[in-house]
Length: 373
Ligand SMILES: [Zn+2]
Image (cartoon, rainbow, N blue to C red; front, side):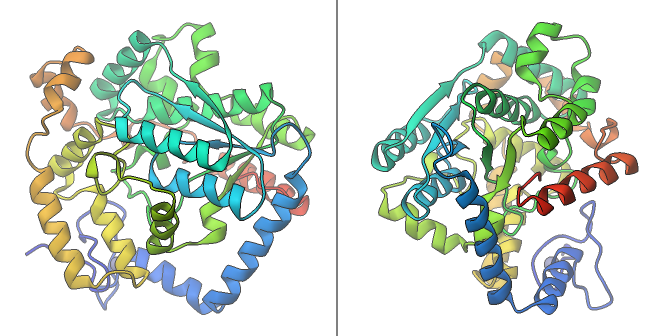
């Protein structure tokens, strides 16, 4: 049987996981040390108060108070609805359509923006370029999520500039979706990584639309007030998964495609299949581990659900042939891509100087009551 953390269910042989002498993994140890530093309820109250202060500074200052990227998935829908109904904000919603959007996600978005009374901008980039990017990332890095992640950020920044919006509300939430090393390129990619993969596939003009501005430009923009803050709303509110679902149920949100997570993108099963072939588990293994850690699921239930999920994802997903046809990739090329590891491609985040610079800018942001995460 696979050796796993004795508290959650993370397998010990995954990259970035280390068990202590009691068999407890680093994710569980980190969350425990947070509990010791403060009482959880106090810390949560303080975090909510900090968010309220940040929102007070944004409210009523322009045509829109903030920009909310809206995928139609659970986190973004929860954030939009909560900001409008609980915090009286006037956001502009922004939906990015990568050409593989699930129809249930579209229904969720339309339903939500109508209910919340919010303007929506839809952005669908050129299909031929997206397919070329997916192909390139698959063959070079063995993943295809970065083109969308990058473009959502780049477009958010562009819209913020165009509409003079001072904050982008992000849906990152480490407590539920920690993004495991080797599985989630979203915690790894940046401009250096991006250009190391695409080379000169994009023209300079295209790159301006498809890629976020450099960190230096963004950092300077933030210091002089021209680049938006990025606010991880869920990191402040710290809702449980049940709390998120309570809100979503009340507004008639539907799980896209019935998937456990990321069902808004119909090619997500290909990503799970890739992860399953590489690591023998799925992204939901991280989700179930988080739920055990947060006390929302028993370890036994998590083990059972994870086994069923891993078994299901280990089979070739029905959407794979269509995806390969769209991005012009053969099955042999796909099998080669499975062997790739995106962490072998150099990025900027791993450099010490960069991390130091980013921390300094974040600190300045905190002193000014802003979020430069
Ligand atoms: Zn653990």
